[in-house]
Amino acid sequence: MLKILLVDDERSATDSLTWMLKECCQETNIVGVAHTVSDAILKINSLEPELVFLDIAMPDGSGFEVLKQVNTRNFEVVFCTAYGHYAIKTFKFSAFDYLLKPIDIDELTDTIGRIRQNRNLNHADRLDKLLDNIESTTPSTLTIHTTESIHFIPVSNIVRIEADGKYSTFHLDNGKKLLVSQNIGKYENMLGREFYRCHQSHLINLNKIDSFQKTDGGFIKMNNGSTVDLARRKRAEFIEIMESRGI
Image (cartoon, rainbow, N blue to C red; front, side, top):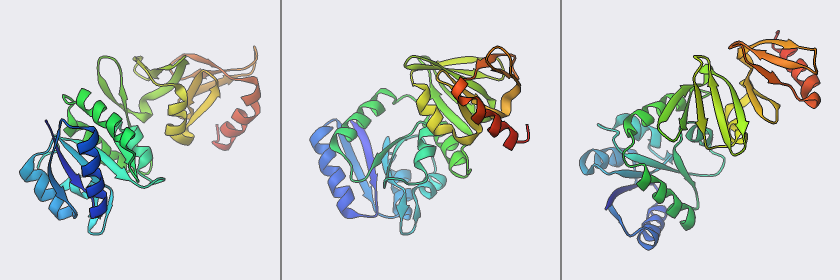
């Protein structure tokens, strides 16, 4: 049985989540409910849940304060939040599950299924990375899953990302390549203005550009020696971006 703690200042929210878990996820055991930050800290320390459903915004603090103050972080977390919360982008960076309120029972079922598959992960390291990213305006570390491992990649180490159908290959500045089963569009939306989609198949780190070659239709040389095609329709926009950066 998966031991679960529910944390939300709204009793109606914890009541609803309790009902849904009993309906769709029978191999779970709700060991406690907390409605304040202080109570959540006490119950995590005493009950040692395996999974915490954690509301972000509470009257006496945030869910992140809970994570900072507990004795151990050896548990999985699913964040519950309103649509458009600033932290959603960071959850995606750090590969954490989140549920938008009002919670949908089908999404809840899918989330529990994923968590069951990942019960052997090092939750403490992942939560540490998340808290580091939350405190930063732009998250500094990207969590990516390959078939063999979970990698915590400093964003500054990414030279470029190359599309391969439904997969993407990360090219890092140490020469390492990582293949992940996510399409490149996900990372384009996630990484922000320091990265540029110069071609349908390429997302590049603007800080890792060595030069732009105008001949042969135009291509970009990265500082790791690789070359990347620049789509013809992107040429004027790319030059404008680079000039605005003083390059």
